[in-house]
Length: 335
Image (cartoon, rainbow, N blue to C red; front, side, top):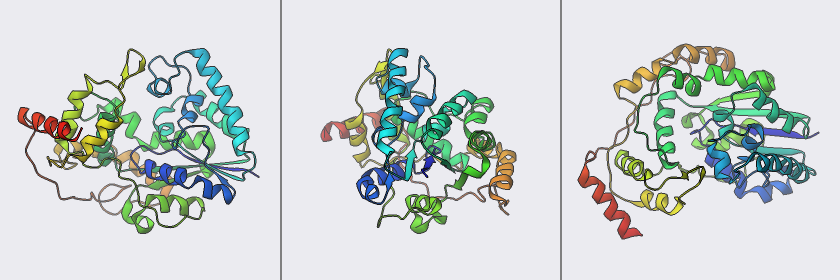
């Protein structure tokens, strides 16, 4: 009896740590009868999203995979199914992970395609999903968007846009309807509650997999203060990740260099008035989630996540023209 464990994020909840851990240890796990497939993407199984979604003109995930036509898209899906079937054939447990599944899949037909892709190969499909306090998610998402090439300045999402991305009631009920509430495990992304503070160990414990020794979580947003983010945001206009519907500038070296800069600027803060109000928007939906998926309301603060965790904020010079040249000079010296 084959079992598939499908980890779907959400975004900014340690997904890179989980994916890197299973990718680095995939050969050891294969010896134990567990497969972390290679055919659906290197480390991150982005191919699942490509197989589940239809052909959209401005689909960045599809473009970054260099799939530019409907016919190529269809060939990719057929090939992915065949390769997946062959790769998992001799394994009882399969772990799949992609955070874009929770962010990009919204239409019933997309969930139907994903479920069909998995059900053909396994008798038992379990979905694991982590949720993060919305104000923290908002700030971390902004960093991710800038790293991915966005040129938009930081702003509080409007009610409609925020409703779709940050409303966990809508998100979880969608997955529960598609796969069955008994097949959905929801975890709060709160490092203080994880074994040794590790989301990797928490994930392994949650799904009943032995973890292989010590594993440090990967820090996805190292050294990206507000000034570095602003510099990169403005630079993105001239070095786009996607240009005219094609894959654009390779940003790997640039992002590595900007993370190494020692200049310290101010941090984006979750204590700002607009962000505090943003968190309050979701009190009702968070209360619903706390009751339905956790069976418990937090006694203080947010009904789902509890009281806000205050952090000491780094200070530094605010963004100005001289700051931009200072960052440029630091990059030049490291290049």
